Length: 200
Image (cartoon, rainbow, N blue to C red; front, side, top):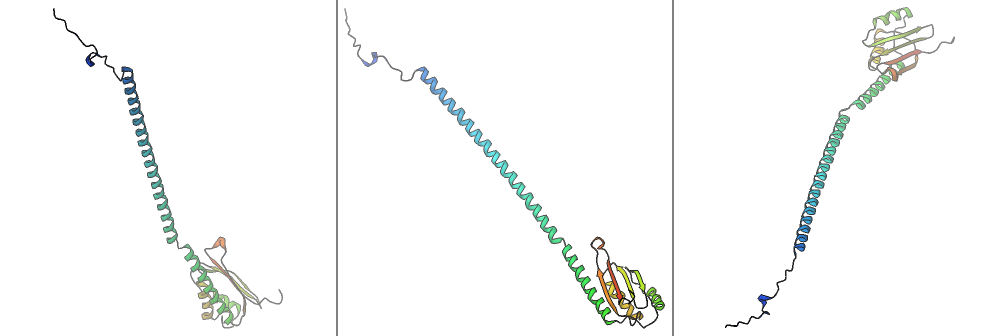
């Protein structure tokens, strides 16, 4: 009879311990899945935010470009608008015409001393485009002419023809007016008159 002794205290006969139970493994796997899902959501959210910021940046740039183009067009319009220059030129022309007419009036050189009937005949012979008489007043000691012109520079030319035709010689013209009414800026009104008679 063979008898064999077994040492039950050997390591191979000891109960093996499992450090992680099935519950722990499932918990760790679930936690890992949650972390991955959260990370995926966070990165996806950051990507959407970046896209929105990029889109907003593009819109801002487009608005800035449109605003810049609008300002450039306004600047070009201002630079190309010569309305102010035209007004300055118009005023300068009116002033020059006024000075020339005043010089004619002050020189009293308008004619040959003929009667008023002859002067009226002479007026009918003076014709300049875009200028016309509105009223003629003749008396013994008083004479007044009022009219209008499309261009102020034609008025001195018109009175210069008086000198050439030798009209109203010897009459002293003491009243002179040159006006451009704002509501009728397309024409210039003028008035020239001798001294008022003693009866008025």
